[in-house]
Length: 105
Image 1 (cartoon, rainbow, N blue to C red):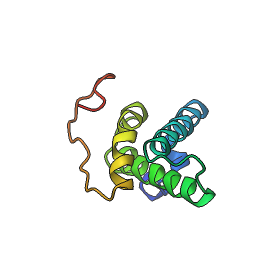
Image 2: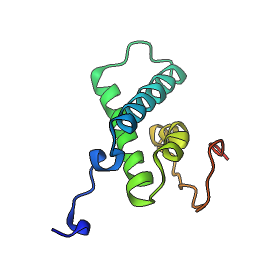
Image 3: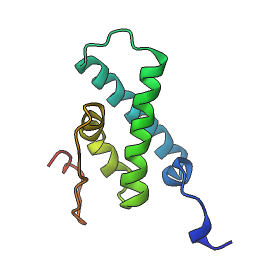
Image 4: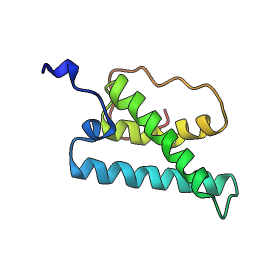
């Protein structure tokens, strides 16, 4: 099987246990921030799942489609999650050069 035939999944994008842990922790952190911002003290399971699914969708676009690194994608996750929750169109940063600390610029 050639490499282009391998399906792109969340697991194939995070690649390592360290990246998996970092990514899931970032999802949890950004979901908690978004719930606080929306003043939702007791979210339903469905709402948490919906926001987690949005995080995965954003991650798949940034890391899978645009080939961003995990750190770069997680640095912008909160901003793009907010836009998804608010049903606001968003466009990923198209810069090809990135350094840690560029988040939100």
